[in-house]
Amino acid sequence: VFAITLERFLRRLNSRSVLSGTEQQAILSLPFEGENVRSKSEIVHLGQDIDHASLVIDGIVARFDQDTNGTRQITAFHLSGDMANLGSVVQPQARSALQALSSATVARISHVDLRRLAKRHPAIAEAFWRDCIVDSSILSRWMVNVGIGDARQKVAHLLCELATRYRSDELAQSLSFELHISQAQLGEATSMSAVHVNRTLQSLKDVVTFSRGRIEILDWKRLASIGDFHAEYLQTGVGGDQLPPK
Amino acid sequence: VFAITLERFLRRLNSRSVLSGTEQQAILSLPFEGENVRSKSEIVHLGQDIDHASLVIDGIVARFDQDTNGTRQITAFHLSGDMANLGSVVQPQARSALQALSSATVARISHVDLRRLAKRHPAIAEAFWRDCIVDSSILSRWMVNVGIGDARQKVAHLLCELATRYRSDELAQSLSFELHISQAQLGEATSMSAVHVNRTLQSLKDVVTFSRGRIEILDWKRLASIGDFHAEYLQTGVGGDQLPPK
DNA sequence: CGAGCGATTGAAGTTCTTCAATATTTGTGG
DNA sequence: CCACAAATATTGAAGAACTTCAATCGCTCG
Image (cartoon, rainbow over all chains, first blue to last red; front, side, top):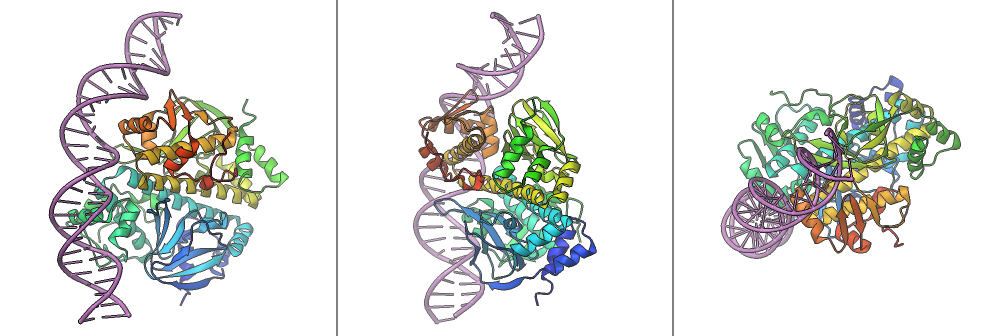
């Protein structure tokens, strides 16, 4: 049942790096340990020293930080196929926590194995490095979003990003997808109060709807324009800066 | 005159990674090309494909993004000794631009040479990767700062970070240092209007002063507390979460 | 069927932005 | 080294966007 696990990870690496057959095989042979986690459970705690990276197989995992008051800021969403903390291989002490936002399935892959692979195959080391850089580009774009945007722009941008990322993996047929997170969590990602997220979603109701954990994008072009969204930073290899209409 | 250049970069790597004598020598032998840039000139343009990384020798370089309106968000400050875009080795197309905020000296180091080093010495590849992860942690902390903090917290945190980073390299004797940037640029880094930066600095005048490009921290503990600052994320190797009083 | 979590609404208050005017500093050419 | 121009800092006032608090609604799940 976990057979597809590493293939997804490999597909992601392949979309950004060139790997030989041997290298690809080496990645597919990585040992891992699947684990079901329930919604809201913390997979990695702040400051924890870990000896494995976590690959998201199913569900949504959030990376977050919090200030001394306990206010949370979500700094990334990790979807199916994402290695949530590949950087932990070279930085085992977690600077951010990971939490499952929905019930999720996660594969643990030991640092020892990842490190051995990287040491033996320079191209894999480079692919891992590159993967982290892409995550960093996404983080950078989030910072712009949080810093510059007003409420509508922030929400619109986040929804565009999630739609694009889901689509690149899932080949979803439509601009409608499951997103089992709460409006409060949307607020933690965009630095908005839950109340204001709610009002902003209402003001966007002609463009996108969000109800019962399902997003439906009614007017992609307008949503992308409101969110000032350009997909290049995601490096999905899909090309173009907008989702082609289907 | 550029002799010290690579030593600083090496010192930075050493503070986070363990490198053998051979590896250290290899880094010190990297060819580079020094360049003086005037204040405000753009070193790397958005979307540009580059074939070299830029090491800051002197001055301050900002990494920034901008939205379609042209509003800028500074996502990092790079100080003397920082490799401003090491990640460009694996991601040559720039997702953020680099601009000198003061007149600065920068060394160009070719991707070809960096890549060769990484391929030949896995430990160096790992050190480069780790350096990028640390930058990413800093970015993550900035996002929390911009997202969660109020004006005083944001400004205080940024000043604490800069003080710590300057100190780790320069062994400055006091909590006073040159910072040749404008209040408007402080605003672009913290997502605040220049006007509000000005008022916030005034409200902090018992704790820190900023005048003519010079920061003077009068009460470090209070500043760190206002900014909710804990230095671990900087990985400077100095240890402890506050600057010991001198 | 009830309990609880998330969504929604209203109202009041706060923080920050914007605009516009003035003061001060810095940099440059003569 | 001075004078001028440009950049930066400072101040006031008005307004916009968002937060907070508190109450109610509604869905889902045990």
